[in-house]
Amino acid sequence: MEEYHPEVPSPSEMVIDQPEEHVVEPNGTAKDGLTIINSDETEQTLPAANDYDAMKEIVLPPLIEEPRILEDAVSTWTVEKWRSLEKKEHGPIFHANGFPWRILLFPFGNNIDQCSIYLEHGFEPDEVPEDWSCCVQFALVLWNPNDPTIYTHHTAHHRFTKEESDWGFTRFLELRKMFNVPWEGSDRPMVENDCANITAYVRVVEDETGVLWHNFNNYDSKKETGYVGLKNQGATCYLNSLLQSLYFTNAFRKVPF
Image (cartoon, rainbow, N blue to C red; front, side, top):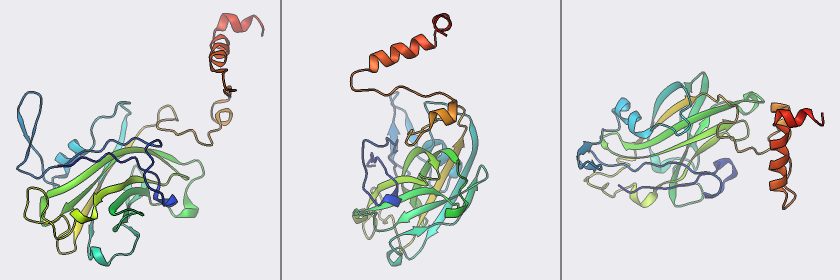
């Protein structure tokens, strides 16, 4: 299957992917019956999209940071009359770790000729807690409900906040591959009879340090930690690091203070 490498901004800003902002970890997909060949030349059969437990093992791989998992949730939205949908649609609310979530869909693309799918929190705009944040690893799977071996998926992780309410994939799947065209290795299309399923796999993880996946935009270090940093004046980074190292050397700090 084809692999995608989207770098995805918030659709609330209606902009197209900006690679310098975020790195996601997409996963390719394959139809049941195709195989993956690993380094030991052994064969692994891929599960069908409606085998949720098996799919979760594939679409939510271990994270490098190894944060503690707080809760996993799986929710499937059956999207009907696809070609009659509005430009922007929302799936039903579901909950993970006590917070509301939903799928955000641009069925004809978010200013691009590809289907765009995102995960967003489900709070009403005036009900989002002021300092709310939630670190989530998630995957979105688009699949044919008549043949669950026909699917494609992408995986990412994000720190959701009041300001960054959604995250996902602007370039989820090219529109030309979705309708009336047999999916790779199949005689059926991805969207059949104007209907398809989208499954969200949501894994909420612990933010032990308080800054997991933080982009540090508008970050008030004094408010959060009681400390402030030193700004680079253009060529002072080495001096800044020296001063900070000396400050945190207890014996040295006791001399002037």
